[in-house]
Length: 153
Image (cartoon, rainbow, N blue to C red; front, top):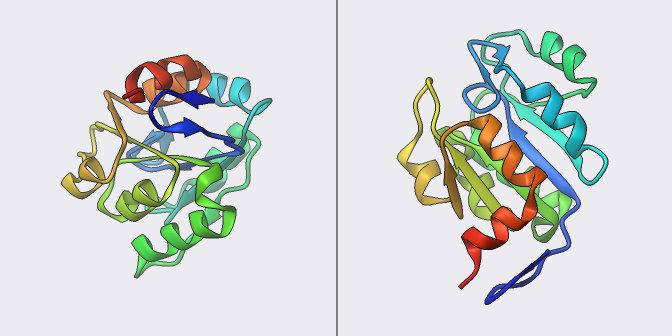
């Protein structure tokens, strides 16, 4: 993806927080699974979560993706380190919580979503793009020219 004023991005991974971003109270938001299935032909989709509601196995089954479950404590660092291991220049990250802020900052493109669960000011300030919800964020990834239009300088 060529973003005028920012260069060429060779994106390989989409890393998504789960609770508050793609799900509320451990239940996927409507339409999420359909859009994720469409994205998977272009990007490797990875879910990363602290499994707050202990329902991640249901979400994994519904999406056909096994999430990376992080340990409680130092969640910001765990998520940032995960992005670093993938190669930040290859990652789009989506999140909304305070523990997502370093992941959003580290990724080549960080997308913050507004959520019924709330949106952390740290996540908001660490992002490149802000959208109204998780489904909108995924549709943005599905239609990369929308990101180009938003990020061009």
